[in-house]
Image (cartoon, rainbow, N blue to C red; front, side, top):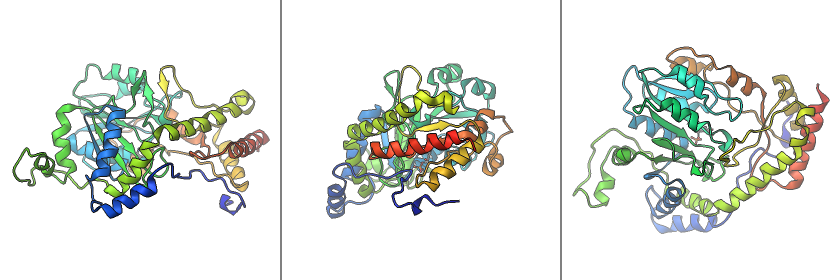
Length: 388
Ligand SMILES: Cc1ncc(COP(=O)(O)O)c(C=O)c1O
């Protein structure tokens, strides 16, 4: 296979950007004497996120995976408990719960949004289900109305939004990440707002806030101590070390302060791809992302569904030989080795399998230029038309 980096002017899939005060804040953090979790930049970053998502509490974590693990701990999973997760997602959307003893029930996705299918969810619910995880793929809301309707008579089932893609996205005007009891965020290098590796748990259920703080803080009531609520702090519950270094929070703060600029740039890239491809979808036999009425996307990525897997693979290979690096995405979890090991039972997720085979993600980052989008789309259109 050709390495796209051999090209004299390669177009990478992702290039993280410096958007504002990152370097100044990193220096301030390193000189400021508080580089561990919970310092001044962590407070600033959490305050911005809290204002954006309207959550009761925002706990900055070392990754989205860590945030999901914290949510799993908060569920106090017991033997026999199950958690419903989409098959079309990242491994840790499921692993976080399996690692805490839950058996997994894999649910299929909808062809439109690529989010959890409420119809399939309804078939999978039984008394063992403790939580349902949803993903807003690419920052487009899954069918929250449909999912909430299916869960309406199951108030004991906790909805968890794995909002790794959806920060700043909205559904009927309400922020993604504000619908579940918990929501996780990712600040990994590939995300809209990044500090290399990082994440957050948004706690929306007020009844869970105090315990979430304890589990976050290595099982101690340290937070209550610093708030003057107890006169000494000690180990009181389960937990782990989840906190993000304040130095990484410094980079994150600078990025968050530039959120409008970042979102405008990413929206522009999205619309440039759309403008180039929308007029020729039938000719190419491709499907473009679907954004339902009422949804403001987060512009996290731009994907195309190709006619079949062999065309997808051929086009990706050809684009790489021209110095452009598109990528595929999630490999179905329900048929993976790990998924089979932790599944409560076998489930059928044909849409996930089909979408996973055909999905191609275009290079997508804040500073992708018009000229680069043109080069990507020209290569994509030409190689797709060539039909192997
Ligand atoms: C839906 C989803 N959840 C979770 C993660 C894991 O995020 P992190 O690398 O921050 O742990 C990813 C990774 O991209 C993801 O796509």
